[in-house]
Amino acid sequence: MSGLTQPQLDSAKTTTVPTLVKRLVAVVVTLVATVAFLANAAALVGIWVVRQSARSAVTALSASVNNKLTAVDQALARVSVRADEGQRALARVDDITNKLGDRIDERSSLLTTLASAAGDDLAPRITAIRNQAAAIHDSAVSINAALETLSSLGLTRIPTFTDELTAISDRIDATQSDVQELRATIDEARTTVSANLVTAVTTRTKKINDVMSQTKFIAVKQQATVAQKQQEVTNLRHRLLRVINFLVVSLTALFLVVAAGQVLLICVCWPHIRGR
Image (cartoon, rainbow, N blue to C red; front, top):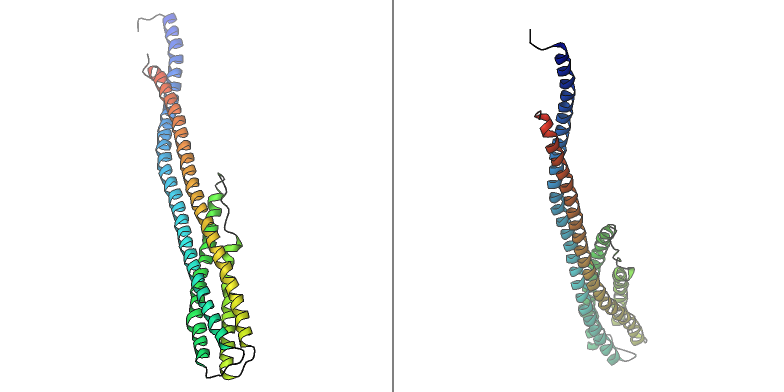
């Protein structure tokens, strides 16, 4: 009825089946390649979004650490200044003490002046140093934690602050006790005759002065350490940003190569789908 002979029908069937199979395979491959291409494009966009977030996080962390380091540097500078002021106050106490002699009258105006020099001049300066030292201690603990975080990235390790910096607070706490003992010794001399007042006062002022000298030395030394750490943090930030950029560019190139392969595969399969 169709006008085709049996051999022609058999030949048509033989030709049609492989063609349908090829077309079906081409459709499946094209669909898979298309989905993969879209996923690849989404990943490509995603890595650039992540890049910006990563750069912002690194920049924010390094800026936070450097800001804290700047605060520590300023506090150390204030500690150094307060230590100088404390030593001048101690020198004034020693000068007044040397004028008193070995035995003094409780009504002596010099004794009143000495009590004022120790209580109204020296003690507040030591308290001011202690407040700065406490702030340095808290900042150092916070900075050490941040430096550990940066070092955990594995590119380089920035040494944390040693106990020498955090110990300033402990030294000043001990010095405050010495100042209290000094004031108690002077107050006692105002009510009783003391044959060893000069020795007792100068012994304590010498001890306090030694701590002031050590505190100033540590403060100046640690200021240089802070400047070094600021430079190390800045260098690490630049290095991390370069690594992030390198990884993103490398992944972008890889995704583009894969995308090109996927487009080529779609182009190869498309004629089979159209039946050419």
